[in-house]
Length: 383
Image 1: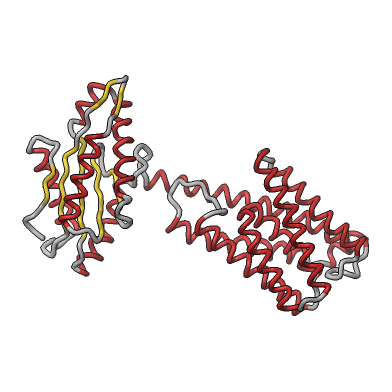
Image 2: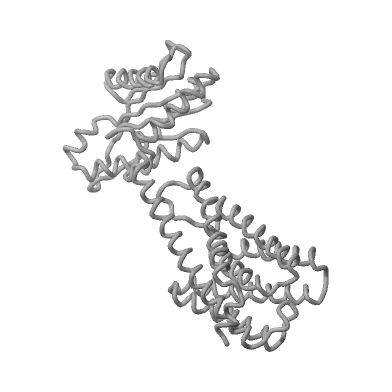
């Protein structure tokens, strides 16, 4: 009898709908991740643009499910969906994100059904489940609750709802027999287990892809983007700014006597110097929001400054040189005096190709090195 009651619901359809909801959300988020999430960064849905998009997505979904229940004049078939959405938005999107989804659901309930006893009962149920899950999520985070244990706890929440729904004969699901309530609970367990597994698998895959992307695009020592990314971005910027005849400056930096430093103090000391210089350059480059710093070779760094004129780029380069010289790097309790040679150039109409501009900046750098190092050479011949 229980099996018959269970399969009176389109369980297989429910599974495919749930998978479709999750996968569509993942497609949206992956498209956003490609442009907004730093490579190697652990994916966090509770903050930033991923949170905004996910909250909006599930809020719209909550409204749609309310409309669907109103249109079909049957709420019972969608209850498991809505409870699970509320629970997992709490887990992945946090309290504020899930609260927005609950508000959207409650508001749409009132819009479609009016302010009836059924609506007030629905609001009470959703707020109660939200409060319970807020408490569970807080405890789970503090004690690092295992996924299987969390799934079992969620099953208890679902079981508690259907038990109360049967004994209280809640308006939104009445009339509800014991056999039907048990069937809905079994469906809840299956959907919950499948949803937890799929979400964990997708989360692990997203983090794995982010780590692979990091290895391909970032220098792990300095945490700056590598030459491959410089080459890609530089080509794009050259085409855009050359066509518009807009200012685009480049700063090329080389750490002075780096090979001698490696020979004298060892490669670990050299790595420490590179990491320190990388952090400093990344911090200082943030002054220009559109600027990006790259490690393009062993001890060589390039900075692209879109929209920055030559005179400002030159002043910025001097500031960088002074900051690096003032930075104390200690190796075996010995302070190292680090200096850099710098070349600065601005994109010119005479630069027929991207290589022309790059080579001109590189020549400025080598002129600085030829002058005895710890120098800055700004290309003032072509502007």
